[in-house]
Length: 225
Figure 1 (cartoon, rainbow, N blue to C red):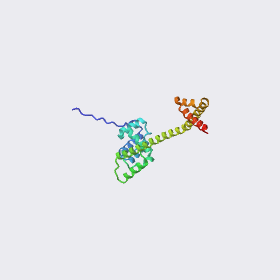
Figure 2 (tube, rainbow, N blue to C red):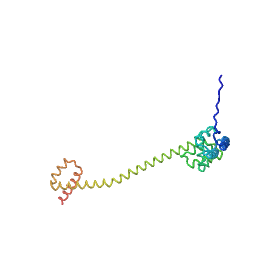
Figure 3 (cartoon, rainbow, N blue to C red):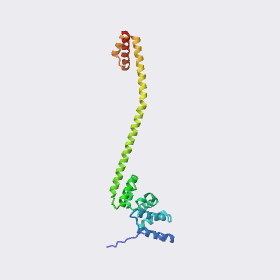
């Protein structure tokens, strides 16, 4: 049976200045001893990484992280970001990283964060699915409120448009009434009531018809006096 050969991949310190190489070895040992389990660990590791990143070039830094520390570049970047924003997330320092990452969601309100932190500090176990559920419920409520606000805004816009149109419609109706009234008077004056009654039987201009009836009623009333 062929022997299985294991090739160990390690960081090449020989290419570095002796002082930098010694410093990196010491930091790698410290970080490996404290690979982040809580946010406070991530703060400490992130600080170490930030202090190291400018001592060697970026590609060497990434290689050193992956080979010497055994973590991915994405994880290291996340911890460095935590260290940079330590003041924002200080209240999460005693939480597990997975729980803290969940609470870093943009939809996690200060009230949710404070409630979870208080429970953890009191010794309670807070399941991550429960926290995600709270955030999801809040996100749903927020979207529902935003949709209600958009609908209210659209309704307000329609109401404003109707209010704007009403004076125009009223003015147009007034003009039409005056036109029909004038036409009715002219017909009664020029044709007489008998002819106008015959016109009423065949006409389909209902505005004029209404005014003609009014004119005839006024004419009849005047005759009766």
